[in-house]
Length: 114
Length: 114
Image 1: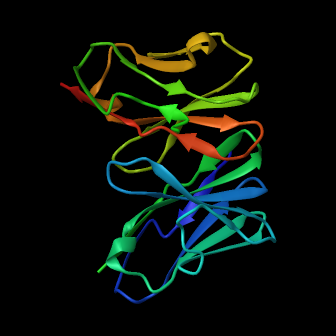
Image 2 (image 1 turned 120 degrees about the vertical axis):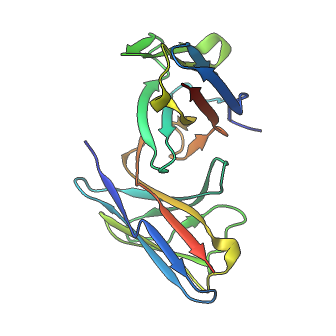
């Protein structure tokens, strides 16, 4: 089956630093990758959609300068949380898609900003 | 308007009881896909099922069964003889053919009491 990995699985950082999260599709080429954010006991909130080689499309209310997304290849997308603050602490989940109807989800990254 | 509604926020059942998780969706597309995911405390989304809009056959997989009713726009999920390991948050999701976004419900937190 299709496997998506995320790295790191957990990160703690100081306020003001930047954190990069990687999302990789391990056994398939993903035409589209998605980034979600999930607050405790809440649903997944789509942050942005990215296609390889083009700029990400951000959802309303998501700061593109704060959450930098790079989709450099068909198997790798990165999310960089710039100048992280405690309110950015959350669970970030990526997904990868090769066809319209299915997304394969990564295991998630827990970010804690102190 | 919410495209996917999971009205049950939290459910508790005693082990071996059957439990049904409700999902109601809204779409104007004639082609769409419905999903159920399980999210255990570890956070990783576990894919359970995908159904396309043209296949209204109910499905059974072990103790899991799904009832897809287009007439009521519902895609309910039943766990038979629940077990403690079934305790998790369950998400219903919709993907429309005209887009590539997933719409998640707000999730139902299921607790199975031993």
